[in-house]
Amino acid sequence: MDDGDLSYTAPIAGHLDPLVYPAKSDHTHTLIFLHGRGDTALNFGPQFMNSEHSSGQLLQDLLPGVKFIFPTAKRRRMAGSNRCTISQWFDIVSLHDTANREEVQIEGLRESSALVHRLIMQETASIPRGHVILGGLSQGCATALYALLTFHDAALGDGAARPAVGAMVGMSGWLPFRKQVDEIVMGVEESDLDEEDPFDRGEGLDSVVTTSKEMQALDFLKENIDLVALTTSHSAATLRTPIFLGHGTADLTVDVALGEGAASTLESLGMDVRWVPYEGFHHWYKEPEEIDDIVAFLQEKVSLNVCGTV
Image (cartoon, rainbow, N blue to C red; front, top):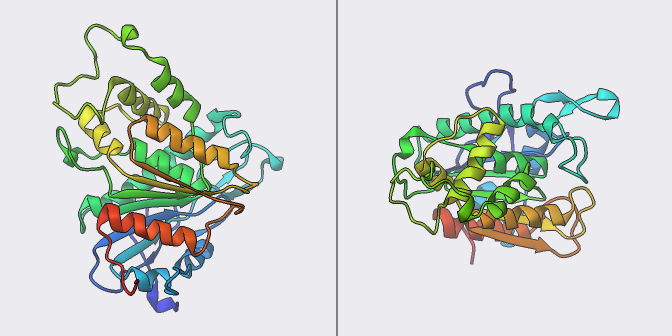
């Protein structure tokens, strides 16, 4: 892929310009994809774009209507390792115990979620919100999940029947602050709730999608990064977003149990989650199997046009 295929979005304060591959045909969808810790868009983006489908096609040829956006994480000082700086979406003490000293994660999650939210809003100026897809690898997956669960847009309106974005695809990742979400969802009994439920706004929403426990969990994630808790309609839109999570069972960097735990927690929120473990695979995405699975998922969930497959 030559330099003529590349462009850049409008700059966002404090961040490098994202790397962008414009759609090769009419622009119908956008994939915003976050690289892993220690990487950059300039390094990861071309690798991802050269990923092969089992048809033998590369991603951009397979998905000509998709615009690909690869933001780059800011360089942040690490809590350990002699306080050196690396490209990371948020600081973290240990990838083996992601809950260790979680407070160091908050600042980066706040800033990186704001970046993702801004990119979503930029794209919805030209395509429907349901055609915007979030994605990420490793820490990029963790950040994209957190940004999804804290995203809101006033244009969603009351009782939104559509998802906040079209879909989310994650590889070899985890969910930050999952333990607290689990405690909220599993630990609040009906008898513990106030007689007048403060989360019941009379929106008439589908009870399968939203309950007080789910609202409290999402409100915790928002307030954790200093966002204001919003109405049930915004949270319901988030919970309607379908998610694909893939993970190698032999991942020695981010244990597969962390990915499976994320899938379980998201399902407990009532979300549509497709969890796919890849037997014996390591910390990356598996070609062509995982690419095939993601493309099929997006065809189903966001009506993605795929060229040249049988």
